[in-house]
Image 1 (tube, rainbow, N blue to C red):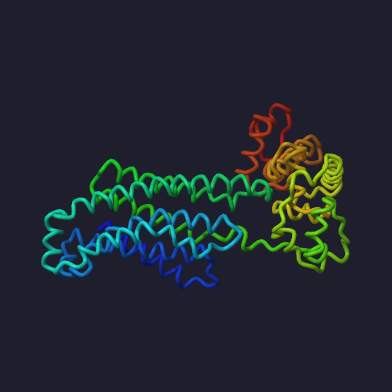
Image 2 (image 1 turned 90 degrees about the horizontal axis):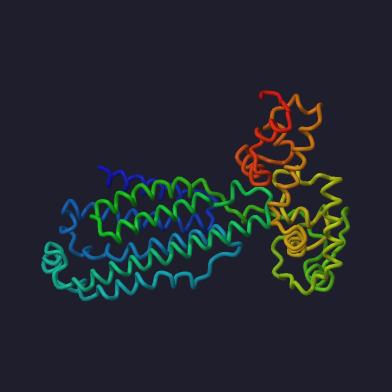
Length: 393
């Protein structure tokens, strides 16, 4: 019954994704992945019910399919974390599966009766091939899971340099799914029965489809607001002068795409210490007077536009002067603001969470985590220590 449930759920999720409007590249990858998984589940169910031997032309087709799962996990993660679309050479990740199908050609050419005999006698005559396939699956799983986890770790660092709120884009769910995939491969490595492997895979697919359908693009839906100058002029000026002035009035009607998507990366030698300190002073001034950090969706590009500098330059300034990521810098200001307003009697009529939202946090979890990281205390412990009582406490 569990296998039938896995087939139905996988098929259902695949159909939902196929009918989704405005599919992203990650949606397409996930859709193909689910379709192949559904096919594999169907063939396994046919195998354990002995129905597969009635279709001898399909025998052996399912063996290399697990070699596709880990590359799909890696490519799916890459499509969610990269700003640029994957290239055609991404198909090279499926060469091991293609190679295994090539090795299976002698089996595919056997007469139907002989293929059935081989299947009914545990691969007699092709034991070497099943061993190669098993070790290839293990090697593929271990390699791609490690690569995927390393990619997600780089992604986590990257978004902290660009966003002040990472709750919806941190892809922690995908990291947990990578751990789930690891569990499947552990089951394979220790040699448990196929039924255990497919049971674990069925549970994994359910969570993959659920989170995958809910997932939105991280970079695809971020459209910068203004473009301080023409793109070529901006890129040229960034290279020669890291402090780029903008005309606030004219910038309102233009696109900010160049700021977020500019291909020119800063060179550390191009930013002098004097220029870095000037930008830093302007950054502190705008944060103090305009409290930009209170915007829960504030991004590096937003602040860079306000200061009239390239985002890469601003990121370098924050990293080098503040010794923090953009995420930690902005949330540090939010915590400082929280401490300030909770000390004022006029604000004690509000709840703790209301004041946290006022400072720019957009979730209780993010507020508690960042506050504990910065102070070593929970918000409640801090208020008790300061003898501050808020509404609802």
